[in-house]
Structure formats: structure tokens, C-alpha cells
Amino acid sequence: MAAVLEKPAVPAENGLHKVSTGQEMDGPQTSSGAGSLPACFDHALASIRHPLGSNQQVYAIGGLGEPAESPSLDVHLLDSENQSWEAVATTSMSSKTMPTNPASRGCQATAVVGNSIYLIGGYGGGKTLDEVLELDTATKQWRQVEATGTGPGAVSGATATAVGDKIYVFGGAGSDHNPRNSVHILDTIEHTWLTPHILGDPPPARCAHSATLVGPAPSKAELDPDTTPLAGDRILMLGGYGAKPLGDAWFLEVATPYVKEQMQQRGEAVVAWSPVAAGTSVQTPERRPVVICGPSGVGKGTLINKLMAEFPGQLGFSVSHTTRKPRKGEENGKHYHFTEKADFEREIAAGKFLEYAHVHDNIYGTSIAAVEAVGAAGRTCILDIDVQGAQLVKNSTLEALFVFILPPSEEELEKRLRGRGSEDEEQVQKRLRAARGEMARASDASLFNHTLVNDDLDKCYASLKQLLGLAPGEATAEGLPGPCSGHTSTAMGDRVLVYGGVADGPAPLSDVHLLDVSNLTGGAPEATTGLRGRKLSRADFNFDRAFVPEARYNHKAVALSKFEVLLVGGYDGANALGNTAVLRLAEVERSWQGCLS
Ligand SMILES: Nc1ncnc2c1ncn2[C@@H]1O[C@H](COP(=O)(O)OP(=O)(O)OP(=O)(O)O)[C@@H](O)[C@H]1O
Ligand SMILES: Nc1nc2c(ncn2[C@@H]2O[C@H](COP(=O)(O)O)[C@@H](O)[C@H]2O)c(=O)[nH]1
Image (cartoon, rainbow, N blue to C red; front, side):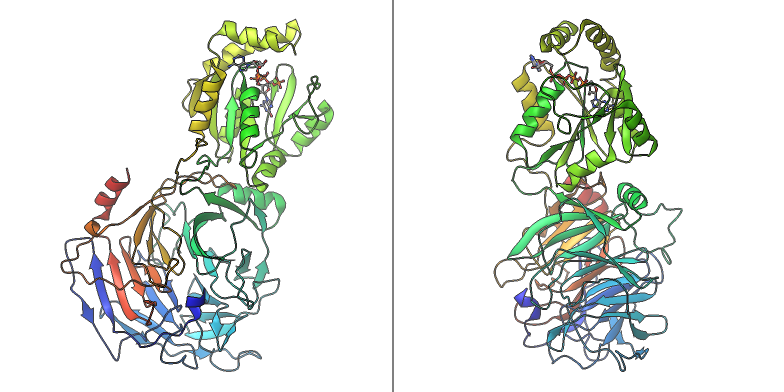
């Protein structure tokens, strides 16, 4: 974080350059004097309207750098035709606390809602700012947002991501320079700060990370690029600085069906955290809940007990309700919530169950609270339920992985069921009859993702661990950036381009990573999977005619189109940078897709 506030020495060359992976190239072009942007870093860069539309406007605001901070907050608008920046004159709506134009600053969190650019916190005048400013780009007027509720207070190096008319602010450092991991939501209509209910374990505290809205975009029919804001249902948070540079990735789920459902049930704002498995540590790529199915006596409970014993910190068992009487050794609240039929039916009617079914003369069901409790503890949820229940979960918004366990033969199943000695003859017969129907569903690929035969217990257990990604040393999210802060991540359709940053040493990075967010699943706490990426190599770029931008950090970036990202300013380790580069990924559609598969 120290580097964020360091003063650079000399302003660098100004101008607009292009770097491309495609064939048709513009050579470097520079401009200076009028039409240029002062060398700066930790400024704000904001795109009004959708990059695919015809009316996109890109504004650069403020920032730190040399010469010394200007007294007011400079605003520049990109003139993409002439590849230059125009200074924009602004006024301010005077208020008791903002009588003149707002003071210069950097390190603020920036978000766009409609025509307005919001600057949250930041660093200026030698202090961390506790202020939210709004620039209405239609009237070119600043005003100070005075919101009720508890906001982040004085904060710099946070991120702000607009989802509809709400702005999600995460992390940053306070006046004490200590990083945080809190989430605050600014309702820009009501001018209220909301404190969301948080599901899942939050990430470590950080600042100077990046945040990008990803997830299902509007359909073509819904998309009017001139008016539709960038869409998505979760925010990808990458890296940043805690006690050291961080290399982890997290999804903050803000509008997934599961989170929306939770908001409706709770009547308050809800967000859910999902870590992205990365590196070579033991991780479960299948962070989504796992439904284990199979006939009574096949060994589901035995396999689940082994998983719980080996991975107590990673997995949690969803404790079902049942009207069945406890067996010897079974504990209420641990093996089941043993419940009277009338009470169970009342709770079902109250909508508290994700699924329930009549199984072997009794009612069994999974409460929403049982699954949530596991997620809230930061663990992957394991459910042991019958086929009817599995089908109901499949139909719900919970994105689970479904595994069916088969016996080696019907004879062996009967032997195990009798060997367990927990059922009387009538129950054994009932369970065996039901088993035939259940096993007929094992090959239903629309329901089950995997089937395993539990012949040799150790072998079956090893296979189960393998498919849950619990085998040691398995990497799951490939090609993500390493530990760094001060980088940018920019969503372009279903790809995210990550550029630059700084790792442990003083030297900035020029790494370019492309992440694929087209296959994200889940959307419940701990349940998002499917992020993949690749570090681009020199071979991906046409360097012959292209300008190669300096490695940098604390720069800013916005998407100009599905294939172009505008990089503005930054710090190269010694100087603030004034240049503007367009990273052009022409033909990436073919080459990149091919590289990932
Ligand atoms: N691979 C195996 N080989 C031999 N015996 C096994 C194997 N797996 C489990 N068993 C035994 O089979 C019996 C039934 O196992 P378990 O109780 O785990 O079944 P289950 O599928 O959970 O049944 P239910 O659905 O009725 O709860 C137990 O006595 C268990 O020790
Ligand atoms: N639909 C559901 N089925 C469940 C649930 N919990 C357990 N089960 C299934 O019931 C049978 C019998 O279990 P037992 O403990 O009496 O032997 C077995 O197939 C379980 O998978 C539930 O919450 N919902």
C-alpha cells in the first residue's frame, strides 16, 4: 500500500497508443500539451454508458502525481476520434460541507450509475477522506452525497462496483492505514448506506485489489448498449494488499438467484462470498453443495463419515429432519433433527424446507437453515438424501453436484442392510423394494453428474475424493494472476482482462491475464466454480508495429469494446505515467478460446 501514496518524480510522455494482437494496427501516436492528460496514478476512470454502444463517454478524474496536486478535481473527457483528452469545466452544487469545487484526490473507489460518477473516499490533502462525491456528467455538476446509515467512513484503496442503482464498496484502508474486509452498499436512489447480511466466510482484509462485475449478461433482446449498464450478478475480487501482496480470488455474489431468494426471505440486503480455488493447495473445486444419493444400505453414510473425518474444516454435513425414531447411537441435531410429524408439517408449510419427501413410511427433509449453516461456516455442504429429494434440489436454485452410489449387486446390498441390523424385516423389505426404483435413476444424466460403485470401500472413497477435487495437490483455477496489488481487471463480455500491478519488489508488472467467466456455476456461498484463465505470452501480441506500454501499477482501465481495453496513467516505480494505451485483442475470439480448451 505504501507505493499507492508515494510521490512520483517527473511526468511522462502523454498520448494515446495502441497495442494489438490483431493484424490491422495503428502505430504509436503521441500528443502533448492541449488534449493530453497530466501524468497521474490512482485517479478515477469511468465509462458512462455501455462500451458496446455508440455513445460511450470515458472520463478521467483527479489522481495523484506531479506536479503537486492541483487544488481542484480535474475532469477530462476522452475524445476517441482525435485520440486526445479534453478538459471539462465543472461546477458544484454548493452545500454547507462543499461550498466550492471539490478538492483534488486519488485512491478513491469509483462507480457509475446512470449519468453519474461516484467517488467514494480517497486520499487528498494529506488525509484519508470520508466523503462521497457525485459528478452528474449531463450537467457537469459536482455534489456531495449525504447518505444515512453506516458507510465505510474514511477509506482509500477500496473498490466500488455498481449493480443497478446500488454501489457495493469492499475493502480499502482506513485513516489508520489498516486494510479492511467490510462490505457496504450505497443505495443511490434512497441515499442510504446498507449493511448487508453476509453469507460464507469473507476474504482476508485488503486494499488496492480489483473488482469486476461478472456473470450472466442481459440477453441480446434486452441489451440496448446505449442505455443498459454493464450487467452481472457477482463481483470478481482479485488480489490486493493485506499484510503482503495477495494472490487469491473471490466472488462476492450480489444478485444471483440464491442471493435474491435470501434477500426476499430475510427482508434485508444479502451478499455471499465464494473463494476461488487456486494454486496447489488442497481445495475443493466442487465448492457447490454435494448431494449423495443411493439406495438404503449402499454405504452413503459410511462414505460421508469418512469425508467428515478427513476434511472437517472444508466440509459440513447438512443435518436433515426426519419423523423416523432415532437408532441406537444416533444423536438429535447431529445425525438428524428427530421431529414429530405435526411439527415437521408445520415447518414445511412455513416454507422452511429446501426439499422433503416421504421415504420408507417416514418424512425426511432438508431445511434451508441446515444448508445455510454449513455455508456460513465456510464449508462445502454435503447432503445425504433420497432420489425424490435430489430431484427437488435439482429443480431449486441451489447449484449442487449430484453423485449416485451403486452397490456391486442387489445381493450385496441386502447383505449390508441386514448386516447393519438396524431395521426389522418389514423395513428391510420396504427398503429393498425402493432400492430397485432408485437404482433405475442412477443412469439419468439429467439428474446425476457422477455414479460410483461402492464395492471396495477404500477404492470407492478414493474415487469420491477425486471427483470432489479433494485429492491432494489438485489445482482448480488455472492461469490466475499471482500475488499483486494495484493491477486492473476489466470485464469485456464474458472475459476479464487483468493487467499490470506490483508484487513483492518495487518493479511493476506488465503481465496480461485473460480470464474466462463464461462457465461460472453456483451463486450460493462457497458454490461458484468455473473460473479459468491464461497468462498471455509475447506470442499473443503483434509487437512489430505496436507500442508496448510500460509496466505499471495504480493505473486505471475501462473496456472500449468487446476486444479493447483502455489503460490510463499509472506508476512505473519511479514516475507517474501520462500515456494512454489501448490493449487490443483482435481475433482473440478464436485464438483465446482455443488456448483455454
Ligand atoms: N464397501 C463396503 N463393503 C462392505 N460393507 C460396507 C461397505 N460400505 C458400507 N458398508 C456397510 O454397509 C452398511 C450400510 O452402510 P451405511 O449405513 O453407510 O449405508 P447408507 O447408504 O447410509 O444407508 P441409509 O440410506 O439407510 O442410511 C454398514 O454396516 C456399513 O458398514
Ligand atoms: N429426501 C430426503 N431424503 C433423506 C433425507 N435425509 C435422509 N434421507 C434419505 O432417507 C433414506 C433413509 O435414511 P435412514 O437414515 O432412515 O436410513 C436414505 O436414502 C437417505 O438418503 C432428507 O433430508 N431428504
